[in-house]
Image (cartoon, rainbow over all chains, first blue to last red; front, side):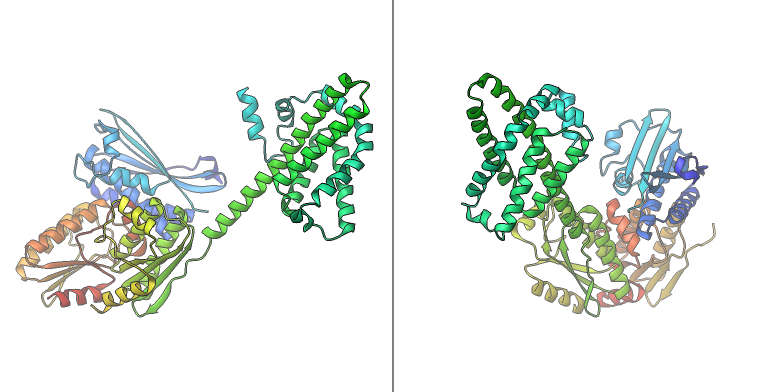
Length: 140
Length: 302
Length: 118
């Protein structure tokens, strides 16, 4: 299986307006269902995508979300990469604290997303954008 | 030094995985093996009387006596021991040897031979053997001592193999038990229309807590429940992580429109809940299951 | 933009039944329509039926809280009904508790709840 080698062609959704947020979470949900995630896990994944996509719309105006199937130690998972070329996050530490928000959000987005996914990585260069990579593994 | 410690520590569990490193850690050289082997004939001669003494010693303990079912069994075990000590002296200390020692360690562990019994028996044997060898070689004590010292090194290596199997066996038992505890099914009981009781039993790790939440929520939907009693009398340990899971579960139930009551909290658990900032307002609790059910029924009727 | 969520009226209760995944814009549009309708029909209760939703993220949840607060300021009560098990599960993990909005299992229970309060 291609996905096992991490070579599966990634599916990418452009994120420019809030309709794209809906599209992104639906793509993610379908892929999660295909991989065999349980319904509660599908909901978690869709919610995480929604938060990541909204951050792009709210803070960076445009970006992309890429979806891929991943595999490690015979375990399958889904990897989601949210990328934008916006202003970046000046204080990552603060952004990862519950309740922090500089824009039109509840401030739970990033820490909440980290809580519901298994792996979470955020990189931000001020002035160049933000890349958030999250992975959820199927429970055995 | 660090790498030796790391490798010898990391080597346990895999027979022969780092045998060379282990031997190096015990500082067992070719000389030691040769010297131990030089004792083979003497040890062989002496083994039988030592073992006789040892069993007299052993059987003077009532606990130990109860392990044996009769003379025949004692004779058989003595033979086994004789062979064990003989192998110790002439051992090639290769991977087969280690495998065999570990297998014997497992047999001991299963039979209830404790590390104390095991090490004690070893000490007894080495001590008696030492005295007898010295007595036998009294004309040449300077020659006898290094032989014995080498044998002691090898004996310690040998003991370590058996002790590792003890640790492994215990770890496996604990893991097994934890797995059993975490796989205990969580029943969702319908007490009457609209009222569910969920007795949570065992350990509540985060994986199981999540599946408990999902089960509870699906139960609410499937039974159209409006009230839930969550009884945690049977939960092994409630730390703040578990308390958090319980609160999440009850919050999720509320989102679906069901009220919940938590019962079976010990004083410590109540403390843990207070510590993470839970107040009576956020969490309805009742002293015992009976009161919890009554409380839930009032919520249904009210 | 087409009206995606019809608001039904039953006596003095308004029922907004969300049938599909809504964008943030759709939710905001729904918010202003509900508030207008509460005034226009002098509604005493509002029910948001979200049973068809399979995601309710931080924006959706916060907007529902905002709507509930505004509905209350207009003298009516709001109940959210039909949050699905997996939605409730992910909301809680995300830290979204909707603490200030009453919830009910389904439309029927929600209506009963508003009926009792009236």
